[in-house]
Image (cartoon, rainbow, N blue to C red):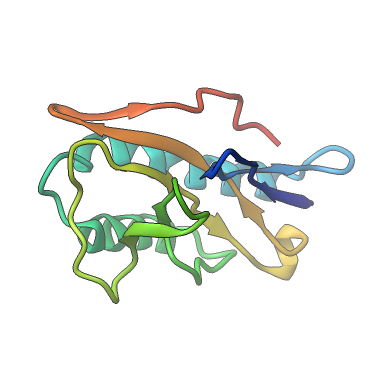
Length: 143
């Protein structure tokens, strides 16, 4: 598995996105992990809206991924992107950030273990709107 977590800087603005590419055919376990990770994006669509807690979204994603017992989720869930590659809002349990209209942020859940050939991470970018979030990176999530 190759995790490609890449961003572009242009004229003072940044982007960030990740996909995992299987070298050869992915195993059934890798495909199952990919499905569990992709399920986090459904939580984002339900939870992220103006005033919502970023830490609460992290905890919901952490609980969801804990159901997959062949890998661990051991990093932040995401962060804001814009004038810096990593900025607020921070989607982790150590900050008390809340979503605001206009926030551009990334969600990058992953699962890691030797059984998965070290790991899978997928990343989507969103902007917070008055009524929720809009997905900005509607690209395939497959391995």
